[in-house]
Image (tube, rainbow over all chains, first blue to last red):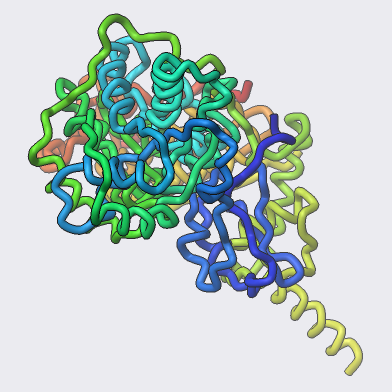
Amino acid sequence: MSNTYTHSVTLDKDLCQGCINCIKRCPTEAIRVRNGKAIILKERCIDCGECVRVCPHHAKKVIHNVLSDYSHFKHLVALPAPSLYAQFNNLHDTEIVLAGLLDIGFDSFYEVARAAELVSDATRKIIDKIPKPVISSACPAVVRLIKVRFPHLIEHVLPFVSPMELAARLAKQEIMEKTGLAEEEIGCIFISPCPAKITAINNPIGSSKTYVDGAVAMKDVYPLLLSSMKNPSKNVDASAGRIGISWASSGGESSGLVTVENYLACDGIENVIKVLEDLEDDKLGKLDFVELNACPAGCVGGVLTVENPFIAKTKLKAIRKYLPVSMNNLQNSIPTNMLWDTELEYNPVFELKGNRMERFQKYSEMEQLLEELPGLDCSFCGSPNCRTFADDVVRGYAKKEDCVVIMRRKMDKIKSALE
Amino acid sequence: MEPIKFNYTVPGDDFTAAGQASTDLKRKLKTMGVDSKSLRNINISLYEGEINLAIHAGGGEITVLVFPDKVEMYLDDNGPGIVDIELALTEGYSGASDAVRSLGFGAGMGLPNMKKYADEFYIESEVGKGTHIKMIVHLQ
């Protein structure tokens, strides 16, 4: 698995200046500067996109395709993330956006908000069968974070495929029945607000196979849509209500559970980490549901969106106003195509390697080295802080002399010996 | 084998600072690869201890000794001491003030939880002098 894992966050070496902005802000301490350029430690990266957000030189990029890359499909289905609707000014209904999608090259659409309403319904049905608090699995960056840092919380994660994945599964079924096309002739393309969801296509969470065939960035589709929406050639019907649309911003998924009032909704990766730490320590008391979004304000804050996340949240309210509460419900029990078929496994990338004694010894060395280090967290060594540097040295990823203060002390010693 | 030693100072009556030691220790032990069950036991017992130091003792000192196979935690304070230790170890009994209870603490589970989650629990207390607690969690 690990050798086939592909990330969507990447680095443009020519643009990278080797500054320390990204290494300081990475929530999983997955970036180092080596030989004047940033490198991403692949096993630690959760594709949250924080580095893309903070890089002043635009060297951190999100690998994504453009629409023309998918022209080989006979039928192209757009899977618009609900956050797409929040990108436009004075929008009062989503149908004009959906009609616009048909004019920029898609043959049909399946609103991810529609699938989200089904996930909401399924969550209501399953919530009492999972250890509380149930943690949402909608944000792939959060699920990956839990996988590498919070093994104790894995059993709390909602074992459903994401609304994006479900939308693709349902869309393919629908189009196959309608057109008689084979599954592989239909391309389901997600319009993504973030790199984390693009990575989830290449490396699905909880499922062995994805039905999503690709993704385009919301910011790339935005200008095309702006012009196509001026004068759409077709009339279409939207089929998602308030609950589905609300998934785009923080608190939306939780409020969609309707009967569950004892929930926590938190956004922004640093806040998410704090909540996960406290959840792990049982410090938050009794909660039924926990919704965590890596981006500020929720998916509307994704790095591939256009609008300011908080304005987007306001716009979302205007769009929701005239919608029915929900337009999609499960007819029977939870269908198997919504459930994970692969268990979430702890990936202990932050743990030192070796048997108990070896790990103890390495950790002991690390603490000793930490005492020698200046504690300035200056990042001149290329690690985010002194503690991580000591960790890197013990693991063999860095040399003690990479610390400029230690080097300076050495030089001073030599100098005074010569005098 | 020399143990790895960590020291923490818990200030009195500062609820925002209480919990910092257990959070910091948890992160360190995670890097060391301590299993999640032991980690949880260490974390809960130490957190309860920190809260006690903050709300009852007017602050105190925590010393943690990490061995390859166990973690020892020492909590020392010069606070008012405990009059009846047996009673204080009863679930639901609390000596917390109303002010402290209004903040959501003082449910009477502090010492009982420490005793429950630590594999070994020792307490000595003298009224007017202070309380000394030693807790040991054996690593799996």
